[in-house]
Image (cartoon, rainbow, N blue to C red; front, side, top):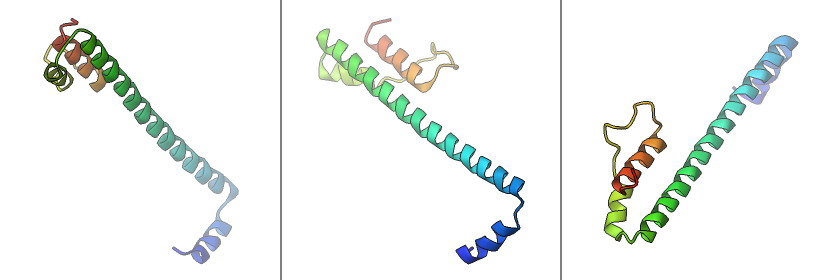
Length: 100
């Protein structure tokens, strides 16, 4: 639909319908922004956790191979199914590092 085709459509639209359309578009935009922010925040927290975990393992004198195996460890069945992916990874890493 071209701009010339949109103008008559908007001219026929009631004020209430137009307001509802604006509100719906605004809510959709808000949800998109909040989702992007939440994903980036999770990635930042996960990176900070992994950096701290690596620092602790280096302080304990672990080798690079041991650190790699801890970071790449998968969660075991002891993890609650209600844990999020970050919590499961943290649990597996702590267990592999002997911190639990």
